[in-house]
Length: 495
Image (cartoon, helix red, strand yellow):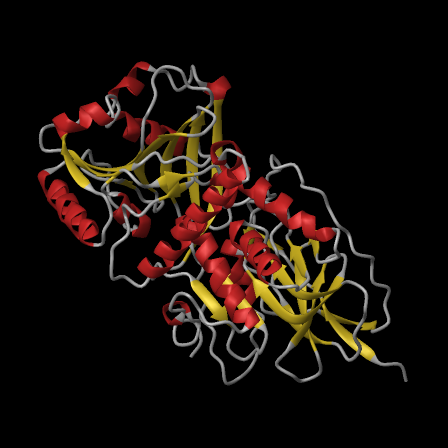
């Protein structure tokens, strides 16, 4: 009798509003011959970055199946699920640090999810020394600065290539209490060797004339913080990765949702990824970096009785308002209100207040962020909501953002949001929220070669290069440059 392989199919569930809801636990399966035809490798050029992720094009829920035979077709050393900034930079680091071959899989294309909807802040301003993320953040920022320097040494302009610029950052306070907190932060970061100073509301006018505060207000100023443009950065990284395609070391499988993991017999090693079109064999490792879809992917993956899985990564919807080619005034720095740190972790319900972020009964939080990007666009934010996988633009949220920013930058009150409709863009992304605020990075317990990197929420761009280096070191068996223990799954998500 011919050898058989079990292929587990996926059932994606739509709720009554046409939005994705978590898939049912019931397992649907069918038998397929193990010698089924496997499509040839598909190598793509850089896709258009303007494509938007469909509500229905999530990765779905992965099921473990068994495969008794292997195939030479579509065989790679490492298969990565997720082509956001985390997955792309993991691929890049592995390509540069080894001779391994890499396959990158995504249900859509790069920059169609949270990566493309970000503001691009590479900041230390709102991070705290001594916290578990501090070392990873510092290492990641060091790698970003090194990348920008290497681009410059090659005769290119990092501003043009990455949208990279040293804007400096301003954390802004409106109250005496907030100002006291920011003064302590300045002292704390200064002790770590960072340049930082507190500016009174009067001093602030020389740095940022459009930012108007009462006398109780002020700002913590960090002149060495950067920002980048996610779309330019992703295009650069993807182009660099594609150079390895000529050597047969890299391939992209976009618009191919991952629908199954294939395991060799009863072993704890995953041998292949099943997509909607291909079986991609993995000789060394599988990395899951699927952003807010990671939780749904993993919940049905672990079926071992001695492992309890709790991976509470949820989609946290965010809006950014972009006014293209804005000429009325310019901002010199990246700006964020001090209450943003509360906004990051907020799930509270309260009413709007001039002294802090806005919350409402839909778990909406809005706090002021503002900057000018490399193209001269005014980028305003930001919001967070726990509303499932809904990516529809909500005009009421845009109005909240506009009003909130206007409380700090009065010049905007003279502009009509309706009048700017023709020159505006609204970015909506689903940030991978995890309640403790710590991304999960490391080996999945119960498997010898499956790694996970997700849960960065609004810090994906900022922490991407450090995360990529950490995963690459794990795959290659190298010592970690950063203590990986705080990000491990065991003890946090597996018990």
